[in-house]
Structures are given as C-alpha cells and as structure tokens.
Length: 589
Image 1: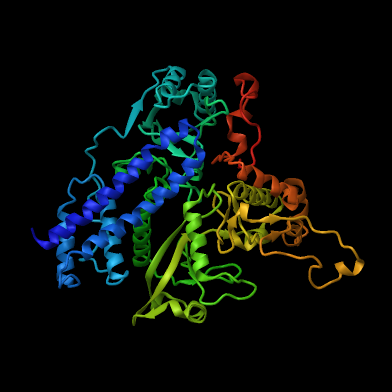
Image 2: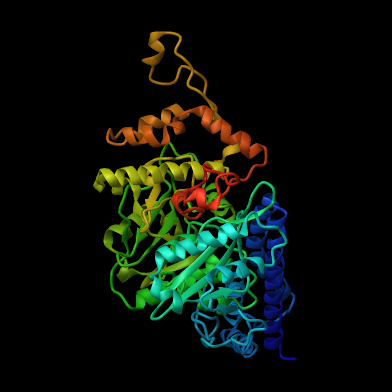
C-alpha cells in the first residue's frame, strides 16, 4: 500500500471514530430527556464538544509513528490530499471529513502553508453528494381537512416514552395558532414536512418542521417539555422565520439531533432558516468545527467580492481585547492584547479559558458563540492605517510580517452586534423600556445558568437585529457559586462614608449588588426602568437565592421565545393550562 493512501485512510478512520462517538453521545439525548437528567444533559454537551480535538490529536499521534523522510514535502502532502479525496465519493459526511483532514493538517503544520492543493480551502463535495439516505430525513403530512387528528397523531407517534399531560388541549392550542397565522382559505392547501428526528436542547425536545403553502414556506416548531410529574406538554407553536432564527440563534447551545447525514439536514433547514449562513446551520446542529471551516470560507468569499478595509470596531475600546471589523460584514475579529490596562489583572491564559468556558457552557441565548483561529492572515492593503497602528501598539507580539500581509497568531471571530451603550444613546423611551428589560433578563438568565458576567457595563453587551441583548465580553466571567454576594455594611461613623476607599474589608470574590445601581443608573433616564423591571438586581438576597437553587442542583427552564408566546398565556381557561404549568420562571425571555 502506498504511504500516501495509508495516511489518507488513517485520517478518515480517525474521523469515522470521532463522528461515531459524536452520534453515540447524541443518541443518548432521548434517554436523558425522558429521565429528566438535566445535569447529564450539560455534561454530554461538554463531552461532545471535546471529541473533535481529542480525535484529531489521536490521528496526529498515529501519523507521527509513520516515519516518512519526505512527509513535509509539498508534492507528497498534495498526493495525500488526492488519495483522501478519492475516498470520499458517496461518503455520507464528506464535507465534514474534509474539515477533519484540514484540522489534522493544521495541527501538523502549525496552521501554516494553507495551500489549496494540500488541504480543502473550499469543499470539493458536490451539492448532491450523500443524498442516498439510509432512512428518510423528513416526512410529508397532508391533514386532508382533519388538522386536529393530524396533530394528535403527530404527537402520539413521537418516540418519547412518557405520557401526555393533556394531548387534546395541546392539539387545540396548536390549531389555534395556525388558524390565527394563516388565512382560512389556505388551510385546505396546507402541507406539513416534519424532520424524522427530534432536536434536543436543555430541557426540551423540539419537533422541527415546515409548513408548505402555495408559493411560500413557514417554519413549524413545537417545543415539548415535561412537568414535575414527568408528563409531556407542548409549550408553544412557532411559525415565523424570525422566531425560528432566534431558536437556532448564535447565542444558544448546540442542538443534539441524530444526523448521520448532517449535510442533508443542513440543506433541509435552509428553507426554515433562510437568513442563516452555512456556518450557522452546521453550528446549530453541533458540528461546530465544520462550522469554523465554513466561517473561514465565508470570510474568504467576502474578501474576494469586496474592497472595504478592516477598521477598528465602533464602541468603547476594550482593556483586554482589540476588536476590529469589516464595515460590510456581520462579523467582528477579537485579538487579545499583549498588555492589559489597570485595573485588569487577568492573564491571557485566563482569557482563553473564559472563552472556552463559554463554548462549553449553556449559553441560554445570552452569550455569543465564537470561532477561534490561529495564524490568521490579513492583507496589508485591506487594513486601515488606524487599525494597523493599533495592532502594532496593542498586539505587536501576535503579528508576523509576511510581506504583503500579516498573520495574527490568535484571534476570535464573533457575530457583530450593536454595542448596547451606543444603542442606549440613540433609543427613544419605548426602545429604552424594551432594551433595559432585555438587559436585565440577560443578566438574570446568565445568573440562573451559573454564570456571573463580572463586568456588567453596557459596553460589554450587544443588541441583535431581533432586539435581543447578548453578552460578549468574557474576560471576567466566573461561576455564580464562586462569588460571595454581600450587603454593604452600615457606616459606623460619618467620616467612613467620606473615605476615598471602603472602610470595610473586601475579598477578591466579594460582590456588592447595591453598587450596581451606581453605574447602571448613572444615566438618569434608565433609573425608572431598572426600578420597575429589575430592582431585584440590586439586592444581595436575590443573588444568594439564585446561588442556593444552583447549589441544590436545580436547572432552570430555558425558553427561546417570549413569555407571551407560551400556551400558558393563551386562553388558559379554554385549554386548562393554569393548573399544571409554571406561570413565571426567571429564565423566560
């Protein structure tokens, strides 16, 4: 056997092992849901994220045992790639197998020499590859003028081995939403297309489908929860593209959905999520490393089709991160500075650990996902002078001069948002009310998920196109359980309050929520909104109460939609929701 083919087969076998284990962990999602084992849900999520790098490392170790004097020869590595390509026709996961090859190559060559004939800069897979599925990806259902019976059958035939709280009530509620959102004359022509597999995330199992009407397609999303007695109920029905986009948003944890043919599932999802990029779709179903590949390809395509320069991102400059962007792009690039201005005492290693924590943790729709890159190349003629000067000043140790371009040794790419502090400066009273409600909800939802943001200044949050507030500055985050929330001590003497510093002892992990008011309400316009909507944020008892719930092992419900969209808030008397379902939960949007 040729050495090139042996290497190619070793890499593909390594990928098969990785994705097989990926599917194995994913397939346990149903059992974890049925057993309400929410802590295991979180552990499985972290375990699945770690799989990819672990298996890349195993393959690299194997390849190092294959002693080849000319292993680093350019023509040899090009032949390895050709051998690998010849293994992929009709392979069910060819596009992700290419990414795995790239990862092995980059691990060996330190992210250098990214040449198209030696790795897969762009995919060589045909759009129709992998379409011979072992089982149908989705099924079409025509109600045939009996919508209620169809909905009842859809729910009752789910593979979940739990009983329903009130399946008739739920089918009526779904039917009501459909009747409200679609004209009566169109209901005769309606057709449903439902993914065969359930999508699991947090404490919900989602039915993901499409509603086909003449000339248009709508999402059909049903989140299924269980009550404290283990009985199932449908919490809402979502049929708008914006709602579906939020459910599959970049600030949420990855779904667990059994997808032996992930490319086919991504293609199917495009009609449900037309605004999502290929990278975002792969990320949503848990293929985050291939999402990184697609993110890089999207960047290359943008660079090839545009001429705008990289500029310093709008907003207050960070003390830890240098952030820049392309004006026409929806991404920002974040580089850790060489030195941090006081009072920051964090290290670069700690910053990286914080970003990895966010990657692995439940982001509850409030922390932006990131993609991490090494040796990222920028053409000099696309870098504005102000940014180049800032890079040289703040991150000079991370710059390698390549002649016509520079390489940054490390950076993160993240979705671009409007900085909250800039948004507040332009907001009217209605917008202020909505965004402060969002901001407070974001803080509370992060806290309930055992994340304390650390630096809660508005500049560290962004506003998405849907008006959601998302946290994106992670260098000071920590677990809620690591914080000591204290009440401010009473001053014993009048001169204590006039002192330059606190007259009481303060440990590194001490936090005084009463002090939040000073910087959150420094703009007098905001004080009434905080008092009315989120006054509890300024009380240490509130934070200590959350800590007790976390320490007791309680995992909060996470709803990727507005409180008013829940069925419990829709005609409760008719559908008898009020007895069994929680009215208010701190993690509800």
